[in-house]
Length: 592
Image (cartoon, rainbow, N blue to C red; front, side):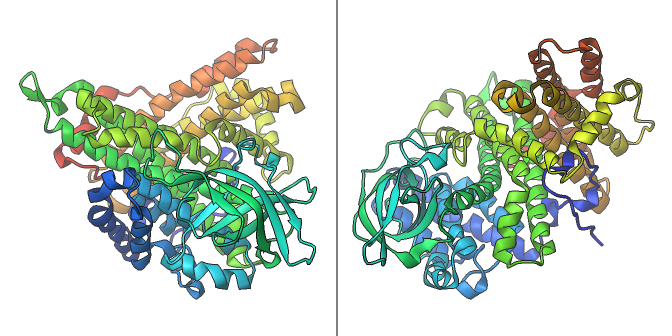
């Protein structure tokens, strides 16, 4: 029987996780696979043949596609059955996000509608609001959007100036203000709008229908990528919103926005996996067709290296995404003290560290994959005739969506430190113990030749590195640490890489325990290369942190510790990557 994990968010940094505690994509059941196939079929039949029309924003095409997705039930996957949805698990929602993620601009519109466009009402609406809006959103009769960002309020969302004032008769809130970068803004029927009531310091949230008086729109924005996504500025000029459309309690809008962002970040991890796999298929297809110097370019070592690295980064990211997604589901199942919707919101907040990690790591993974896809295609990759050009442009927004990667790197550390301060897990005690026992730790060794225990030993050392540095910088800067953003960035990079490395290791170990040793060598190749490369990246980040603390006592001792904690077994990366690439080339598609 599978072991259920009771891990809390961020706790991975101080706790060893076993392979039977995580979920891996190889465990999808028949129903989930059928849902995934429906998504694939929909993209092949409806989206891919119309990509040029979508990017040209042909009148009505995006809404029409979303309506067709609604007819298939794809818009209602996360919505409970009593509101005409299917009430599927978060893991299943992530699988849908992954599959639709290959759909370029359509993926953005779809994710907006099914996520930030609908979920605020599900999670925070009263029963009357849910009954009124969710069935229409679930079947695609109405489309949803989310209005948070303003010209002067981006990452600092609570600085928004949109105002809501109660009317003299007490029946309406009169809304005045401007919102920008509103995805689905051109065709949405219902908007979650954030504004401050009277002179409140914090936001409240409102459900606003397109037909309410006082709403106007700017023309569609011209963008670098996701050109088919409707993105408009929206103006509220004495817009009358019925008082019963206040979403949640007064002054709770900022909390709503934060929790919806946690959800959006972790779901973005799923989206980009689908886009990455699609881009890898395009890369290998071209490499298997293009001849130079009398040979297919897929036979060249430099191309194999790129193909293999695309696969490794994607497979590793996928391992982390579904690990965290299952943690969310388990947290919901274990929370019996509230409604399922409240439990979902709590779970998103609980795994805020993992959500921020996945948002950053996954978006930067996709940027790497699409960039190399263009490079593999050479001059043709730069031509709009080739599909990799669209993927390259569309990818760039993911490092800005859902809070910039800069903000999310800081959130990784800030949230960890706050959890440690609240003693949700023994972060500072473990960190202090490592610093106090560095001399003994440096002399330790795996004590075994077995494959997985040795990998766990090295990844455990990555955790010790992170904890040691957390202790050093916390002690050095104390309350001023949050102003040392360069140091926080380096710490976040260490923590992201160790989390993904551990996720990959646990997936490969579980895969071998389930399926035996057949073909497991390729997955061990991925793990070997990823851990080897991650160690080098962590060493550089560790040195950046150490030297940036300036007058640090015992610098030599900590230098030795960084070297030791980032030492792993040597890997013939050339041969490992060639084996991975050869499998991809033979299949002519991503089949890992």
